[in-house]
Image (cartoon, rainbow, N blue to C red; front, side, top):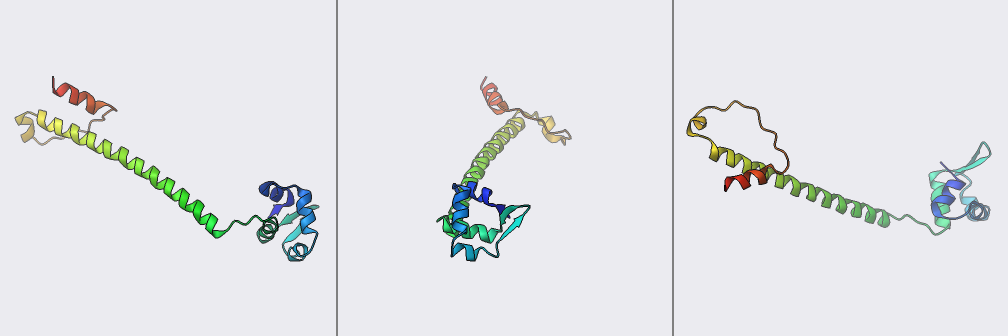
Length: 135
């Protein structure tokens, strides 16, 4: 339930304009069951709100809503694609580090079973390691 003031602000007209329209037929007849007065404030149900908006030529059609949803979905897909690119880069960096560690291991340590904790790698560590490899 919304007040006349809330509806007026939402659609960008004055309260007086709404009162004028709802006071005249056919809108006054159609709104009989959708309007109530609580504490001397006129409130309108959701169906009544739709009728008032239609009277002012404001219709939130299904097509418009589906366009908004599709736009949101496409933006969300773009966001997720960017996240995947970032994750792919992180995986490539970690794979390169793992390869370097295996190449630099001594023959004895290759035969032993390694029981150590994974190393936390800071940003830029791959570039640092790759840079030191050629020296």
